[in-house]
Image 1 (cartoon, rainbow, N blue to C red):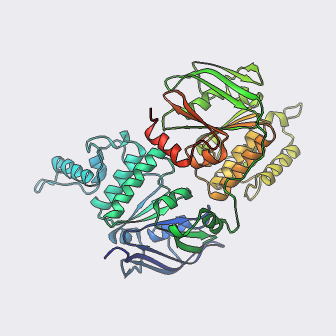
Image 2 (cartoon, helix red, strand yellow; image 1 turned 180 degrees about the vertical axis):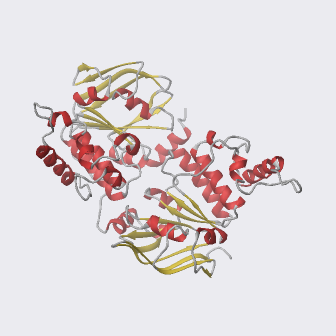
Amino acid sequence: MKNGDKVIELFGIYKRFGTAQVLTDVNFELRKGEIHGLVGENGAGKSTLMNILFGLVKYDLGNVIVKDKLINNVTTSAIKQSGVALIPQKLQTAPNLSVAENLFIGIWPQHKYSKLVNWKMMYDQAAELLDKVNLSIDPKQSMGSLSYVDQQMVVISKMLFAEQADIVLLDEPTAPLVQQEVDLLFEFILSLQREGYSFIYVSHFLNEVFDLCNRVTVLRDGKVVFTKHTKELTMSELITGMVGEDVELYPKRDAEIGENLFEVKNLTVNPLINNLDISLRQGEILGIAGRKGSGRTELARAICGLDVKESGDLYLKGEKIIIKQVQDGLNQGIGYLTEDRIRWGLVGCRSLKENATITFINKLANHFGLIKINQENEIVKGFIETYDIRTTGPNQSAKNLSGGNQQKVVIAKLLGSNLKVLFLDDPTFGVDVKAKTHVYRIMNNFVERGNSIILISSDIYELIEMCDRIHILENGNFNRSFNRGEITEKQLQEVLTHGFNG
């Protein structure tokens, strides 16, 4: 087949789970040598469609054609034999085995007569494969010692060469990556595209869709809204297609910037932060950008009482405060929203209501120590309405909420503590565009009331659009700062990728 030929065709795909119609008359195509974006809000049907294509979910009606061949029984085995590979968001690797062993797991090169593993042949073939895709990785190195992006590229190489796939389904591949790693992955994908490989790219990061993809298909409520060339599409049109209405992704705010509200002096958190100072003004959103491992998260965790700091003084409205643990911070109006809501932000097995009031539950107790249930219910009802939390009710298990709604619950529990300063660590990670916009509105409302935010983010567009100032964290301190309008997305990306010029 030549570039431009259709290598995947999905016709009239229908899928129902119980009473819920998940996909309705979905048509989709992928061409050879194309990177085709697939976007939509959480619940739009993206994952279901990819699972159907890869044989993980049975569809009710429709046809699946791969390389002009109708596949009557779409199983994972049949799809793999057709040259299709799925790279899931959570990589499935053997971290204790070598890169070479991961590349050839299950298909080990063997000695002709003994049938034992031919280790020399395996390492030689692995080195040849890695060289072919320009990966400077030692095949004898353990898989677990590689960075996440290197592991991704090894897994993709395994699918393409060891398993002879030429079509790759990528599901949120950049979610755990920082910008310089995203750049590496994109260079790798584009180099493979030039060799004629084809990709379906599923992502919540819409800027990546424009940077990487040739065409994009939008799903909404299980139906295809449109398929268009990205060069003929604007961000506004893409967002409108996803949510069904005009949405301003980064809403404007009218917050008056006042005097210093919160100060940090001589903060040291070994080994990453060295004698760092921060001043945060009333009504301000201050951004902190930095490479992976720069200490962004450690800085916030130490200030808010989650980690130990070697030294550092904190001042709120000019008065010195002491925060030794999380509750100390909450009591004084300082809160932290974790970058990992699943692991640290929520008690997944407990209800939405219990999660939303956990930071101030003591204030809802009577003199016998019993919770005032009616008052708690009214507060949680207000949270659900104020933050537009999509739920079956206050008693729904937190783990069953969508990512965006989980994030809203985590924010609600913090803001219910009457905070003055809020540290947000990648607050829109893994949420869809509508949920992002709602998080941004919550942020604006918070600072418009005279409070302040320190925003730690891997999303350079988020930093540029939402922050009044941006500090660049490098070598344990802020080496450069920018006021709103002094740096573009491209310039910030360049700084984070290549450091400072002079």
